[in-house]
Length: 71
Image 1 (cartoon, rainbow, N blue to C red):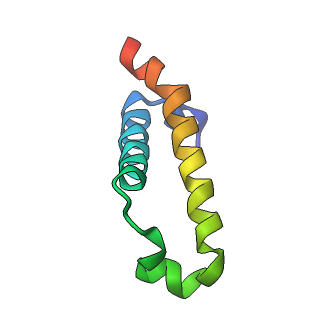
Image 2 (tube, helix red, strand yellow):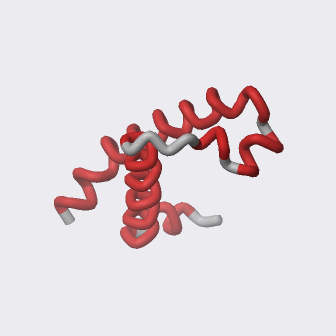
């Protein structure tokens, strides 16, 4: 992949929307541990996996939302 792909404003906006959905699911209390893929593949390690995903999503929103709002 080329670097230009990751600088595309459309890709950044799509990733921001996905990160926002992830944070929203955490806010409403959706239990991600009960998802079929999580329970079968990760088992007990799923909680740490989803907690890391939440931190990454919040970080992505904090880093890229100002850029998306300013453009």
